[in-house]
Amino acid sequence: MKDNNALGIQYLQEGKYEEALAAFSEEIEQNPENAVAYVNFGNVLSAVGELEKAIKFFERALSKDESMGTAHYGLGNVYYQLEKWHEAKDHFELAMKKGVNDSDIYFMLGMTLLQFEQPKLALPYFQRAVELKPEDAEARFQYGLCLAGQGLIKEATTEFELVVESDEEHADAYYNLGVAYAYQENRDKAIEMLDKALDVQADHMLAAHAKKILTEN
View (cartoon, helix red, strand yellow):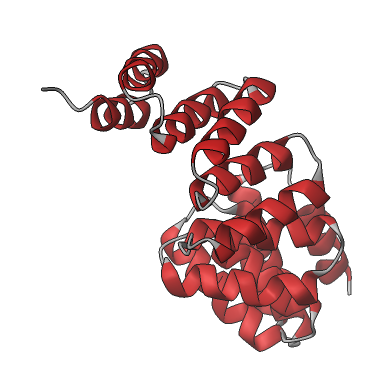
């Protein structure tokens, strides 16, 4: 007997959304009380931008099993995309309480707190995201920005260096390295990093402006 949930997840990972919806739909028909199938269906709808429909499926999952942390996580993601920050934050926190504990949820909660302009509160979430998934360049970049925002320039520099090691095309990380080295009065290194930002993204206005300031002085 085929496992529709496993099949649907495979299709979702391959970007075959119609096939994924068909598999999860069949699972729901056969096992209407299976909360996981509703979450999976909601995840596909979310992936294709059917956000309002996705909300209904995540809520249906919770009506079947209120301890379903992944349903709260799905709702958090949808509300984040809809820029409903309070709802996003509430659902991410509920997801954590109900056992979702991977790097993605720490990253998303950190991103949500940034929308409230609370980088100091976001910082430990990005730190945890990076601890759980060291290769996540975007989480590390946000962690570096929060460190820099708290005046921890050397620590931020270390993080930005690690970002560009893993992603040589990360123009914003090079730009922030340039600024960080300028703060540390290492003008040559600062210009080198700003040049790298401009190599990756020729129209990086902030990098061009920072370089202009450094080369004119």
